[in-house]
Image (cartoon, rainbow, N blue to C red; front, side):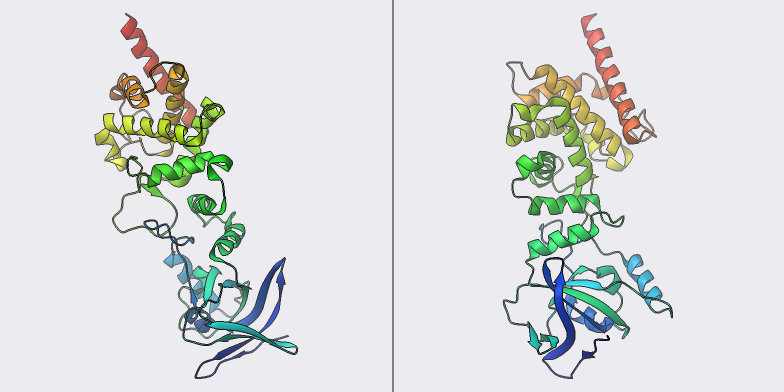
Length: 347
């Protein structure tokens, strides 16, 4: 059966569709010209400065590729996915009349949130090609984000850091359920942290802002520290965060020049971040029973004994190391340097 889109020159606009459920959620399904779907829909891209929005940053090449493809004679696409968010301003309505259903748009407003179609629609504002669509009815922004996560969690094009950032909004007790993610996000949001606003979250970034690592990288490195120390068996998440924060504050104080030139040094690259968190775990285990609980002082003293002796540049001993094997090699290298220093001090 074909569903025709009825457009008039003035509002309200009526779109013929069918109403049903996708799993357990209410939806409508229909067809409309690409230009229409573009005109009355919007994206909600994550703004990394404000934390608003949730979608990936726009990829122009991806979108232009789809524009070229959809105009070919044998092209097709799965339905574009939207959500009609709660209708507080009465800009839209869904009316059932007998066997027919219509989406009615009362004003020239963008009422359809693009849940899974921003790259397909991005450059189709001038095309009348008919496309299928499905729209959830009345999902809140949080529920919509959850649907987006479900659809895209395994997508190669979706940043793992963006998926992680979504979890911070969707999980109620993040400190308990996923402490490594909670701590990583605190490092990004805490103004006293060297990582403050320095993590790539996967959304739209401020022009000129220098990102040093991704949220996913820091989360995985924190998880490494938690696993190697079992610190959460005796400390809460906030105290654990303060220990990890003290480590990064101490390291960046000692290696400020390298820290401020991330492209030329290995401190911020995956192998550097992961292996250094293992060294932080070593120091914590050595000192956790000490009467001195000033972790800033402890880390500065322990790190100062060996970090100056290492060439942190991209051409240094960490060059070419990658993956879990590379991290193990880097950790081993750091441990040897620490041991050599201990022997010299004894002698």
